Image 1 (cartoon, rainbow, N blue to C red):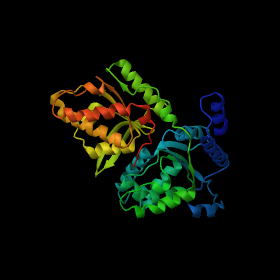
Image 2 (cartoon, rainbow, N blue to C red; image 1 turned 120 degrees about the vertical axis):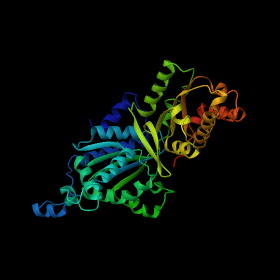
Image 3 (cartoon, rainbow, N blue to C red; image 1 turned 45 degrees about the vertical axis):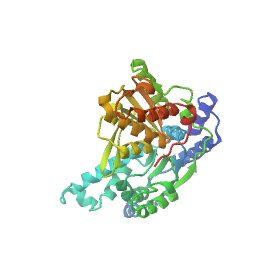
Image 4 (tube, one colour; image 1 turned 120 degrees about the horizontal axis):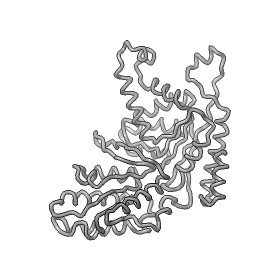
Length: 375
């Protein structure tokens, strides 16, 4: 079945609700899928094409779908990827893709000048990296595209120029319009040509769906599970599956002031940590702000009750909650106790009550439907 047939079948089965914005996106993806059925990508080696008399075929225009979280972008991407009539295709989180690119560039730079690969590829590692990517997959589907890393920003233009020359077709989802990518980044003027290239090669579609399907799934469900037990963990696991469409998740890194902030598990804009990974480590406001801005939902396992000796952990937890609250990110957690009794006494216990107030507000349906402030 095509993506449009699959989408309509899910509507008929009651698995999806009627939504004009989603229907338009499905139709555009269907049209792209039909074009891909008869498309053969260019090798990028124009002299070889001339030698064998092969005319370079223009690649179909890709698609860039952006909109608020929970509007169905990833769901539509999954349907498109599953049904796209392309043998060499890949669906990957954009952040993970860029990590692979940096690793490949580093590997190439370590080659000796006498290495046959280096001799063939030249001094610029971008060209051979693009050739390798295009050879493995000429349909690339990127989920959750965002650019916050200066190292990513500085190579994206050259990398994607080479990919497009080789006929690679791109489909991407994002919370942001292309013009808003890397909005406050260092030397952003050097990034602007990439934005223009992307808008030329991809049809930009705003998925202005009428409802937040992500939070609708949890709008009536609890988000604070206590006391800690196997049942609580299963409830948090269930929430993870609902919010990520059963994604297994993978680790990620956030570039932060010249260092890497590790995220042990993330998928579809949801990050999951243990309490000790956040509040028993030397993390500070910048770390928590980065997490809050990069993820619309944060899950925390095993929040303990905190004794007076755990004042530093309590202080970090307050800072974390403040960052999540200001970004309107959602918090789901398993905890030893309700917020009111997590830190009843000790240095900063009075200030902790403001944190309790925010935690209670963050459990409300009114808070959970607020748009996430990212970037």
